[in-house]
Amino acid sequence: MLRRGSLLAALFAAACSGSTTNIPQTPPGSLPACNPGTQAQLSVPINGATGVGTQTGYVQVVLDAKTDVLGGVWNLILLDAQGNTVVGGILYPASGVGGTAPYPTNEYYNATIPSLGANTIYKAFLNKTSSSCQPALLGSFSTGQ
Image 1: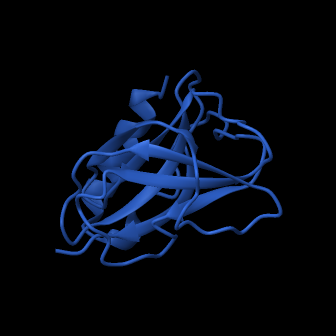
Image 2: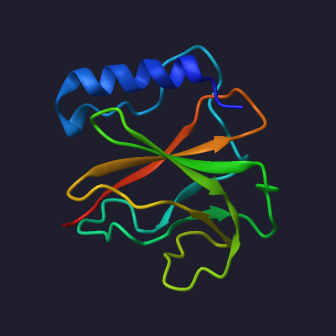
């Protein structure tokens, strides 16, 4: 389970910053980073995307893997500069249609997300729900109106 104290500290720091560039790279703390054992990044929306819809319903992640390495115990956490979090659903295997294919072997996962704020930059973190590790940064994107 995600350490609430560590995430709250990150949220407080982000809220006090007043700038989207100061969103923490990882929530502060002394715990090891959540590590799926392979490379991972945002697929839909891609890292750095702008004008993403607020009602997309999901975020997709791609890993360098041939099989399901997340095993139903990983989810996404989105963090904005004001310290607001959006907790996504459990990542489940997906087709990858429309996503990037950066690795020799690409395994895609989707996480459902609720409505997002308009004109907001989000940093996406990979979180292992069965551990108290620090969520790992996957990338960022911003929504449109």
